[in-house]
Image 1 (cartoon, rainbow, N blue to C red):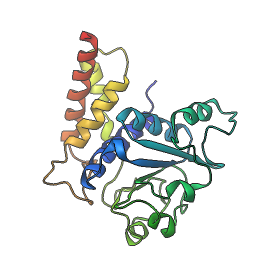
Image 2: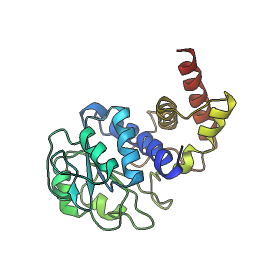
Image 3: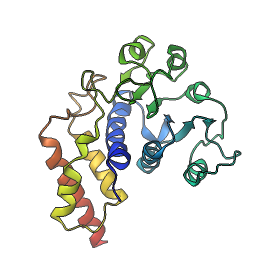
Length: 234
């Protein structure tokens, strides 16, 4: 099953992070990212970022940082606990953000404070995506030292909107009669979206194409189709 708010959002977050990390002069394999909100969307994003090659991922839910010492009745939480939090830290969101390079919010408004942003690593990347009111406002995040900010809203730079994924993913899959949407196809879609921002245009205010960019669907479709064909040959 391919779900827009889970896998679609994961793809577009991955695309945005690819370019944000490049813009900040960092590498995906070296960064620590924190996801606040360990529901279906947050966990889908988390698994995708791990597949993308992120260095360290910390998941935070209502009870705090997900770690390997706590027992979780939710099997999804138990599974993600084994895959994340390399240093097995414990605590709340503020503890998770200390020294982190990136934040992804799929939770609720006003959970991230200026002090939390200031505690992050150099050139912090923030994707507070709770709608319509994010975990921290664009203005406050920038005032607090955020280098790159992307939200789910269209009235600020870097709208991280899963509409960028559609109809490209399905167009590409149908064009080659794919029998599934695989992880490699999702990764190909994210990289295709990221590639539409050329290096000479990349900036903290422009890390992802506009939701109105008509070239996105075809680029995603071509990448997804090629990925399936490669998998089929192998």
